[in-house]
Image (cartoon, rainbow over all chains, first blue to last red):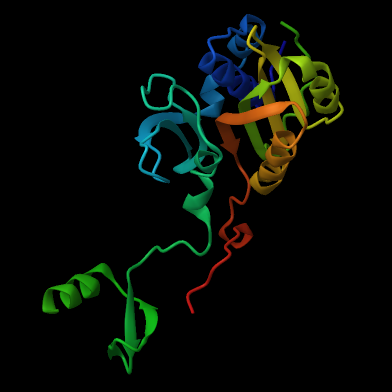
Length: 133
Length: 105
């Protein structure tokens, strides 16, 4: 029986949640074996949540150079496979349109001015100004 | 262990957001919580253990809707906590679809 991509992702979510409380879902895991995981092509890397100072361990899933999934790291001694609701938004904050992607410099008349408006500048300009000051 | 399986949706449907979470439920209110969760087609109960911890999945089009759903579940009488474990989100792939609440100046 073919397993859809959505069903596979849902099964992954269920199995991960179950593993965090040491419950096994053999019927779900069996269904996942039938899905061609190569098609999904999600790469998993280890990281730490950056929302607070606790330092929860998380796994970050990347597909086509974009974060599409996060999972609490069940091997982490800090959070033992559980996230909080802030941790749920880890991937979303990467892609908000108001995120900062370049340094901002207060500028007026094309130059740094402490009463100026925040203006995007290059990293070279930012480092030059910092060194100058 | 009780298992509630639903038919998978079509493969070409956008994934949106899928979350796996653990609920801690008051044992004496488990049945009323179960009825409320089962009446919501975005929620599926996969398993539960002897300590009344339930494994559930949530599905929605956006992460904002998932957040509202999580809050709604948290507010159900008899639910002690909702702990998200796994989240997969493929909303707002294009930059013009992305949301942002705060602009500089």
